[in-house]
Length: 174
Image 1 (spheres, rainbow, N blue to C red):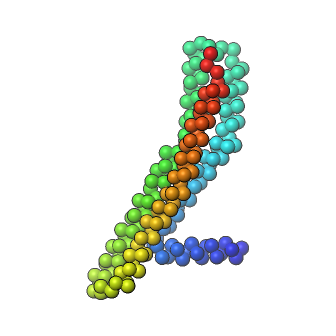
Image 2 (image 1 turned 120 degrees about the vertical axis):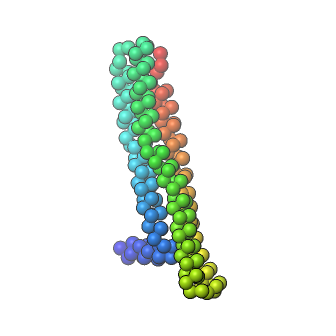
């Protein structure tokens, strides 16, 4: 339990050095990872059952050669493809959004640095460096969040394409 408290304190310290925009980055990151875990869950545990059900339904059909049967097969494949690709675009959008939120944090941080310089009238390089350092932390956090999502979202998308191809191969086209 003390380990979790230490992690929480470290995270709070990081957020306090980078500003409130890091909360937004964290929320977007949490949503993105929730969606990616859900997609992995579907790909690994749910879709194989769905694919097997479609194969069973296709094999149970009397007619697999008519135009009507081919349209049913195409519909089932399209439906499965939609299920596999669900939320991938949203995940990719969240991945792209993370660096933009980080950049927003940097811009707002720089504005506050310049505002404090204007009100205090000082050009102290040490204070400026500390403020600029604080302002760049959101960009770094946004980039790290995006990088964590790029790899896994591309893996999910590739796995979905493979699953669609497997399904097409499993439903013979006579």
